[in-house]
Length: 357
Picture 1 (cartoon, helix red, strand yellow):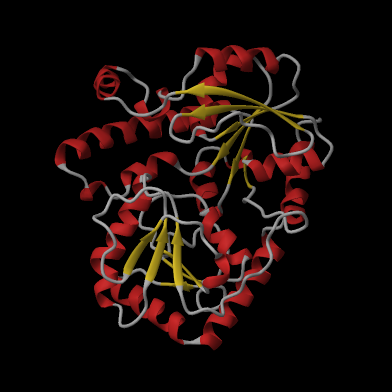
Picture 2 (tube, rainbow, N blue to C red):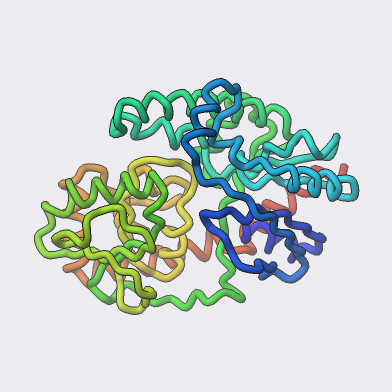
């Protein structure tokens, strides 16, 4: 959302942000890093609790959404909405506050098709959790459809997600991908020269855990010489294992030429992949991981869906400097052409103009 706020402010709009400072990603005294955007943060505990999760079985709303409700946030949003021209709900879960904006024009900034995240990978879950998650995913899908019907516009991050939302309201959906600030950001291209591979991701997020578990169990044993260093605060696996090394120190991008993204569930657009492209890294990921990047296999990255193909692709990238450099350079050029702030601003300007009529 920061990229969208940054672009809105650069277009001359006054932006007021109400953010939930959750216990999972709590920040001490948060402030807005964007000129022209004012930030108010409201503390909220969203960590799942077994008693509220069980009580939700008798509720119509998905537990994944109800955890984001705050009476304080609702009151503040209701107050701010009286003087604003447009309300943007950043993710489906913030739409719990939709009833508190009156008749103001509104936008759902859809980061994913949320219910599909929980539907994918259900077969890997224990039976009781599978039944509970399946119920919540069905409720989430119903609510996702309800919210989509109520907002004025829907801005998706990927074309793949746009197609799902367009099934019901094709006239109201526009793809506005995430962007990179190449002008002011610290995006010096660190390149794909080093043969070392890395992964950067939160290992307390279910889709990331599923992907890394697949890599450790299915891909790593098939690697001939490549190794992977994983940078993450959390590590739900037992230490480093074989060719996979867990790291908690700061990541030095200059030391790595290959980015690995073993994505097996989720939707939307993976920001870490876009950032790796901007840095000129050679990437190996799955078809699902490549969604939203408008990238071509063997041009901007390598796509591999089976464990055998994934291992072979990673081994190849780590052993072939010419291939790494070609793909890394093409990735960096692609990111600048398709995902710069300037490119996305052109589409955002058109979208905002629809609310001025």
